[in-house]
Image 1 (cartoon, rainbow over the protein chains, first blue to last red):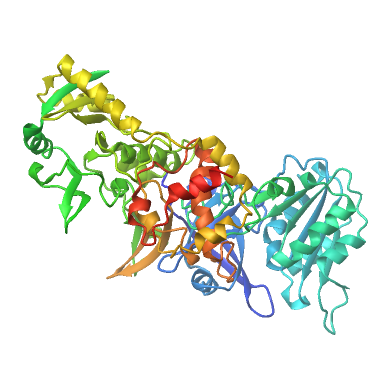
Image 2: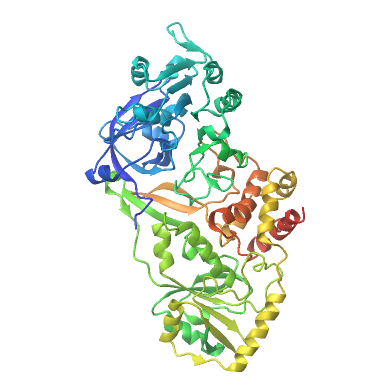
Length: 279
Length: 339
């Protein structure tokens, strides 16, 4: 029997400052043991518990694509004890990882569909993983049109800029990067995510929207999607909740009878509509 | 069904024999209350008791346990798993409600797809001899939750008090093996007749008042109602109901530095505490007493049915007897049931 509380030892490869306010860093980890690397597989949208012994564990979405097996990325927003320790890690340090946990995005169901990615701020991390996964040469033909709307409060808070500019050059993905408020150097779009989504004029037939971002973005984006004609079955959200065990036992991340850690974190809006509004 | 009998006067000797093989947890008197605790000798045990203040869940989910540890001067590559071999553990004299609670905990911690190794190791080492309830308390409601004063669910052996002897009902193979090691006498037919009458009488004194499926339906429809606010007005959010409940199992995991070692510890937690669901951002999906009290009731009587096919309550009545503000879960359930 496997010990589900035992972290996999990982090595820090990079700990990159993502945002100008230095509040978000992307930690790139590799496996210390070859055997762990070989047995580890995950789907975009899944998460893991990162742990620094002495500080504790916390859950983070896996921000990199499973097509790149050797490294795992986690984008970490500085907030509490564990995230402070994670921000202080240097290349060569070791860190624990338990996972993969949760269900991930419904990739089977998305085959041969148009995919509309809607991300806000720090919530973009697992959507970046999934976009990168879809855009991989081995996978791209399994999806129809791919559109990405990604917004941040200001240009300095945009994550994964190198990757965004690479996507910008491609003609098989429509990228709409926006900021709530630009600065003197910003030449891109300005406006909040729901407004940009509304302007897209997407054909909802055969399209699925995947949404992850701050509560305020979700609150105003869902009515826009409904207005555009998306049925609740065509909208998926990735949720956050305080977690400890990540395996459906410690009892704190439930919404009604569903555990965000095991039944989620990805739910369709149709599923969420059946659950109590307690998230 | 197989039965044996043992005279009450032989119980001390019976336990003293078993103590050589098992760590025995049994009801004992401590500071004027009855608690489950480890015994060193058979004569410490109290069997003419209603129910213990604490539940015996500690046998399978200790209040504190170290999951892993690591020397502070080492890193995560040198983690030690705390999976010591378990001593054989005998829970003696537990009430049938408490024995039944372990079947519920099994569903949470021992489900096929996701077994909790710490729990499973302990659980496999546990043998349960329970003691049927000839005189249920006023606060008992086991029959409402699917059990009964002589329920055999979760027990390996069930003792039934018939006066100067106990009838020993053999329930599982584990129980049969234990009985074989001991020299118990054959049960007389008149003893069995007496036992049947006792069982009937006891059960009749706590007839169930609620159908659980109907209750679930009514609770699901009352999630948004104002009733929760009124109920929670009385609650102190002290969490005592959750600590004493044999089915409550929510836990926290924290790291603690001790001497030259960091330990990752699992400890009991409670859905009644605000920090239970408070996110680092400050957002809390259950910000007030109302949401937290509702969670406790909904979890036990609705969500557990969805997830495990049984309610997360065995009707032991501890939360009723020990609540400092007399918040009576039976009245709460009845109030929703009547809606």
